[in-house]
Image (cartoon, rainbow, N blue to C red; front, side, top):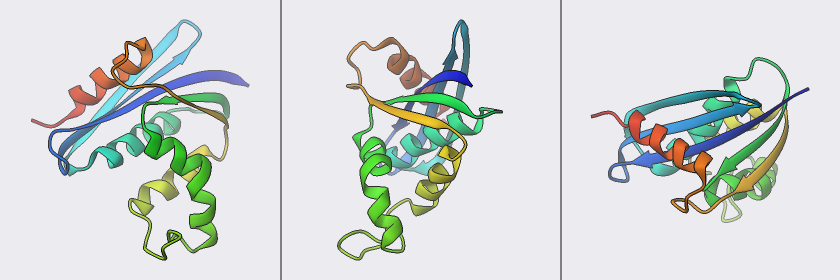
Length: 142
């Protein structure tokens, strides 16, 4: 099984506002940068989209390490999602989960892979995270 690290980040100019996402896929010596954006979005939607797009770019099941500076994404997928699914995609306060479309897409995108999550502090000089941040900012529509 191939081993891949995906560095992800989202950016938003205004929240909501124009936003971009970036994902840097690294496997051995190979790197594949991905980015995109939306005219009206939020930073959390872009953070989620970065991970989904990174995973969807893999053409076979892989051992994946996802590196993100988003506690929203990491906590959501490793802790909160189990309760949301049990509660019919509602929070513990019985409110609809925000960004449910993306959480469901992420849940599905994870299925074929063995995934480990790693949180890093944003804007702290971590090379992979800094590159993902650059890609996310490049993806913001002007």
